[in-house]
Length: 370
Image (cartoon, rainbow, N blue to C red; front, top):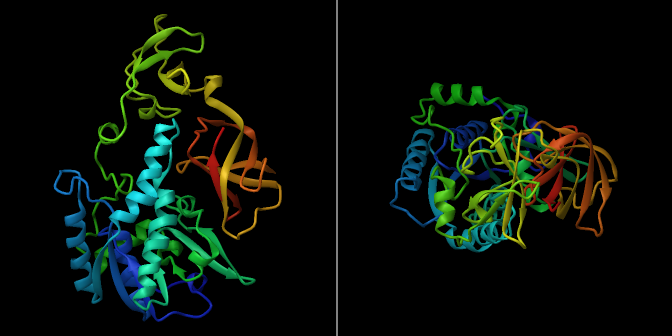
């Protein structure tokens, strides 16, 4: 039998757990683990996006069928709930506002805070749940009357970065069954118990966009405002379709070849000047415009409810990044902070999240502003 590590169990052990199920192998195995542990488990499939329901990139129908199949195999009840209206209002609208302002938001962070651990949590409690669970790779620990958000044991799959805006009340009755085991073990469990989705490919698309081409998707919602593409020296080397369609550090899709002097170094998006509608590009991965040793962040959210004491920590400025040593200092107000790094950081991007860690503990973070 697979057992859950005690560190993921709230102080008062729940009996009825509602788990978010996506049709993927992670949430499916998590549901099975909870059932094996002796909980009364109810699966909940969240439909968060309704546009293009019948298009090739929408997998909602197949995902629902996968959820039903898994629920039938492991012997739990399952139902579907539509949060599309809440998603459009709380997540998608903000997503478009950020892109229109020239920043690059992370909608998965907002989705977790506003939908998966707010709308979903509220709905689960209305069903009489004692706790909710998801297939996220993370852990929670109850200590000293507080709930800590911890990294997953499998560092390569850790998703605490996306969960850093969760509050004490949201984490108080959450279970992350997969936090203690590696992804390879999850696949093995799925095959052993006969889940048909044991080898189903992990979703890599943004939560509501799915696997469709990203620029093609944005084209439908954001205006095209062409402008010049310039080098740091002011030389015009091309024309862009709109600043919203580019992000700092981007290499592909700029539409530029090698340089006129023939050195052939790749072009990278380095800056966006919204006032003049100018996209600035540089050549070479290590160009000074792509490197930074400090950042400012706003809209801070701390898991404990209190900002950490200024000092030395670790931080991520994007999800697929190793932890970097940093020094935290206060910003201009209670909702802002600054990070200084002893080592240069590459393509620090406004709109993305700067997430702070104290060892394995995720402390929270904020939105990079500069």
